[in-house]
Image (cartoon, rainbow, N blue to C red; front, side, top):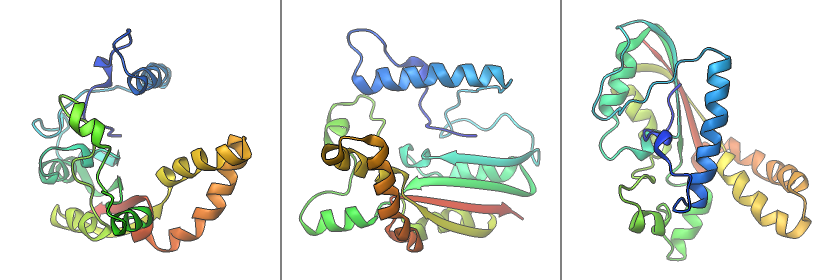
Length: 206
């Protein structure tokens, strides 16, 4: 299981910490407790510079959720490494934000950007935001060019649901009701993966 490439262990918790840093630090503490309870080993690794510490053809399944869009370089080396350590017939599951989801297409028409938050890009040193989000065709291309086959792509709206929940909560004053309404409204959009906020692809090693 692969997550964001930066080490959350280094996040600040004092007076100089941002609200997001405190939230993510608290999440990391809870996650570490679960890892320890389930005897899961956590390794901090810079995928852009280092290789996996696994032997060739040794892993059954690799998952990477919202990770490669943070890379400051091409994800080619990372995906090639995934292919190397997976067993023949092994599964790779990738999830990324969609560069051209429905909301972003509308925003661009009105002259707004589809890029990540400007204040993060301007103020973070180093920058940990989204560097390059792929489209559905680009995501397929990444996997095929890295030696994977039987690609199946799905559209999900986890990021979109959270945005709608914040909007509807101002009206309904109930997060539970807001989440239910958001899920119902966004469910039909999954028929069109290219319009969804999240792209998930499942593929196999030859």
